[in-house]
Length: 97
Image (cartoon, rainbow, N blue to C red; front, side, top):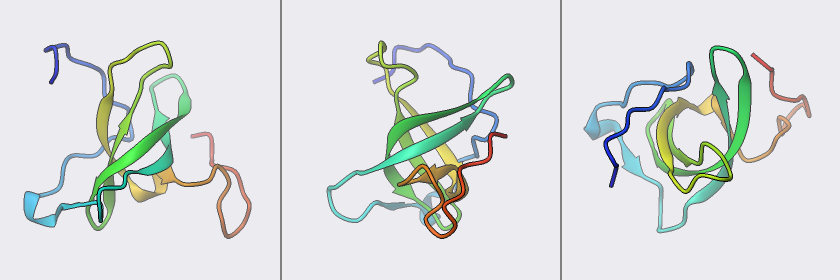
């Protein structure tokens, strides 16, 4: 449940796809991932879990900070969600912007 507060969305957040395009992540396992969030003043990488997916985007659950119990859910492109900090094919780090 939400307490009714409104939060700023990251600049790289996407709109939710049509419901028919969404599928739950297979099984009851939630996949731990690293989430890249682009804000107006910085880029942040936080831990999260994949909740649902569509062809070109995923819904991730993440915590704004370690001190807050509140969780956030955001649709992001697949390029902004990884299981490793470095690109598995090239070993290159994420771009900062």
